[in-house]
Length: 83
Image (cartoon, rainbow, N blue to C red; front, top):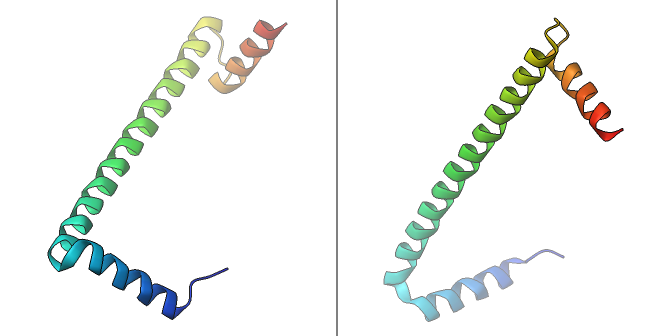
């Protein structure tokens, strides 16, 4: 179910009538700023998760004291903890 040209034009006319010609650019600017803030927050959270993940893998590798890759060691530790 997609919108046709007439539906899009009708929606644009309704938006123009409701908000007026002066408010539409302000709304668009606000949406752009909100989108930029959302993107910054998402990237910050992804960075924190990746840093935490690497710290956990590093700590798991240090606990065992062997040269097994940290991922494998972390997985083994999780399996042992579940038992």
